[in-house]
Length: 83
Image 1 (spheres, rainbow, N blue to C red):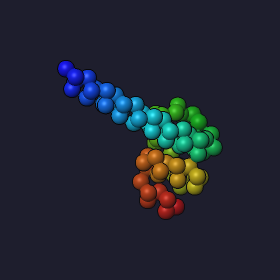
Image 2: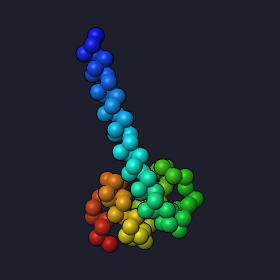
Image 3: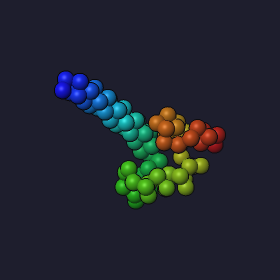
């Protein structure tokens, strides 16, 4: 039974760290892309597939700062840096 509790504790800690890292990226992207969101896609709710499609269709107009944040977060491929 100890092994199970220890394993559970390790998995819970790993999950917490993963969630925290994801939230950090999300905040970085939101901060970097706030202006682009207002300019191009404010009619869509954050964290929706519609917003992702809007950013995709406007990718050539997105700011360099936003694109860098999206690439760093793994949201878009590095080829987007070649604007």
